[in-house]
Length: 522
Image 1 (cartoon, rainbow, N blue to C red):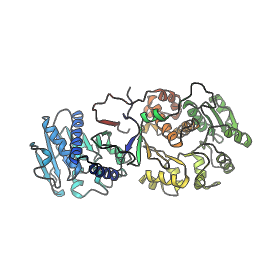
Image 2 (cartoon, one colour):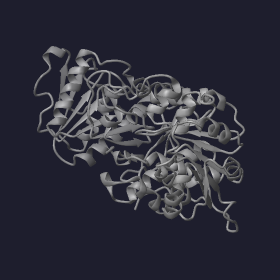
Image 3 (cartoon, one colour):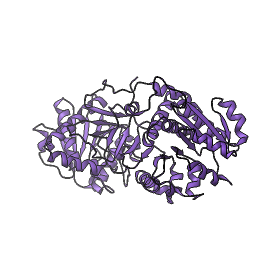
Image 4 (cartoon, one colour):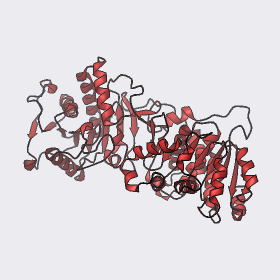
């Protein structure tokens, strides 16, 4: 079964500003602007034919390059015998030279107070949104806002909408929607997916996101983010040598689980085992010994209050997972100091993050330039406490929040959410491509931490370990087939199936120029 998103590897992701700068650079390097526009418009027409094989098409165009892409799409559809009409919002040439002499009806609208009620009829088979593209920075102007509201009304009446690059009204740099915004059935991104189509609330308005190769030169390191895909994961994940033993393939110590919180460490430990760790130890409150050893006899148990034994367990491990179910009560400061004093790669999660946020016994800045990799895995609430800001401020610009915590801590950071983000110094921001609301269930953070710890122990860099844990955990959740009935405890048992899948690039694509196909979020 083919995996989505289809791709060869990690996929570059551009902000609107980066895409515009790259467009200019491509033209300066000799790529004709009209050639790019022709390729983009014809790709849009191809996808429109797939989305709506018959029936009338309405193309809503703006004055800029996005509008030009839409005009080329309209001309291409007309040349193929489709019934097409252009709704030109604002100034476009009359006649439009991009029509190449084809007669396509054009309805021009210049006054937001006089928007024609029948401009986008409910009988249309498809609306193509070529209004604003990546140029929006703030709230749409009144005329564009009127056009957006008309497209929203059409979508609510059941007419599918294909947006070009990003849905109009969505800020391509951030995903913000400062005013009315189109709700698309699908969004066709040119060259690369745009960040605003992948971050909420823009992601919810983009629908299915596909990316088209239209003739751009290689992007190299032009962009500050990338989409982590199954093909990327298959390439970078650690592999076992034919001749090895349990400690060489990754030993993990999971430290957490205050009294009555054994479930968190069990979930993390089970995920570590199922992600390929050869040896997993559980360090937890002595009261949790029976349930831990009964539930997971594979993992030796070390009581939290036996500090010398805790030191020995960590010293013999390739990585530590610290924090699931730990609690923040009396005595935990000593444990934080003791665990983080070891030069072992560490996943710092849950209550260990809360202790750092409170400065008990030291704060997150103390992690700068540690002797071993540190991976912090906050959800938005924990991130807000670590940065000393509100959750609303974190959610308003999640990439910036993740990068700020990297700068403060020197660690790699996973900001959990939809999509989860991986930030690390000197690397593009990584976005998880596999996610759904099915993962919004208690305990998934423990599974993520345990899986990341296993990849760390197997020698993966912290940023790769984080991305691998996100992708394989999400894929395992999907493989259970449980949907909204998923429990975190279901996921570890499906991890071996996810790890065993063939995630090689696929060639059975509906169009040869398609480089990414990302299903709509659910």
